[in-house]
Image (cartoon, rainbow, N blue to C red; front, side, top):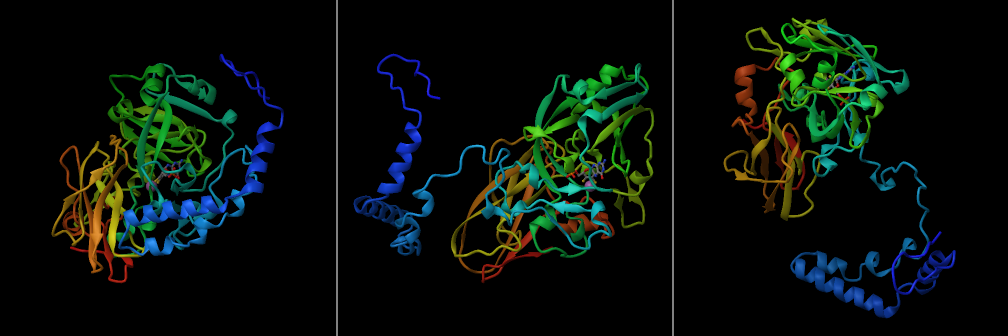
Length: 449
Ligand SMILES: Nc1nc2c(c(=O)[nH]1)N[C@H]1C(S)=C(S)[C@@H](COP(=O)(O)O)O[C@H]1N2
Ligand SMILES: [Mo]
């Protein structure tokens, strides 16, 4: 229990139940006396008058029982520590959910659930809200039975256990992952009602694992002939993707950690590939094999999915880098501005080619632009949070954000993108997003040219 306090001076030895009984007595029997209540009321009114002398806030606060009356939780003991051995969100946060778009795919095991970007802060996606995209459902794989094989053009083929991998030198890096099909439904016209569905195949986490270059060195890959690696997943879809050897040796991670804990089963537990800046499909989950080769493997799926249909009937393949893109997450479609006056416009920007250099925001559909504040840290191939002050006067407005990355690339307008890519494409829509604010305060998804 309470040991002696290891310092000089008077040492107080507390009786076994000293703290609990004292505290309980204090809050249950005394509560707030009239004098303290009066003090609270006065100081709260002074504070609210100072911040909002003209707004309705001061009048509402005066006499507000939520501040003047003691609720039950202020007069009773709370639940004990470790009542939730693994913590969960407040029961009042039940609306915060990954959501599936009904009817998007024939079976929900080969579908997608979207991250609720409109309700998140900063740049890290809570692990339980990381979007999911499976071609054939997810499994919770026993890590003691999981193996990773490295074969092909290597001096020595190897099969690693999770224990083998986790004792190698590891790195932790924060990166976004975006499905190449994010914003896909908006190529032709406005199709979805909120930023969760338009941009929610996007998440950002700290990933921990061993650099793929360490494994390739460990197996002695053939430096003269190796040009590609093929990554293969252990799920029923047997998903494979080809990655150039330059990229594989650059910043690709064979990861087991996500946001400080093991990967969640939905996101590839116990092992997945992290391919920074590249579309999600290359981030092979439940990773079981890396084969080093001298030519692309042209796996069937790679010739069909995540390629770009061009207006002339041809397709562009291996357009795998997620180009610079941004979106305002608040205010965004489906939300409503409750009042005129100050609004914080906030959103996310990212680039598969490096750091975000600047984000501009327009409230008049792109006629005038102001530069937003970027929150730190600004990291390479990572989400960057931006904010900008806005005073809404109650008239209709058109909100847009435009990101520029460190290569100088400027996020295009939807019509600029269509001029090059036509309207038959599904993948890689990184156009500027427009949200219309009506006089009622309702925000909706629109396309502006
Ligand atoms: N083995 C395997 N890996 C996979 C997939 C899959 O279905 N099976 N889906 C891919 C696709 S298309 C994307 S966008 C990302 C999604 O990762 P997430 O579910 O962790 O968000 O995983 C990729 N890796
Ligand atoms: Mo994807």
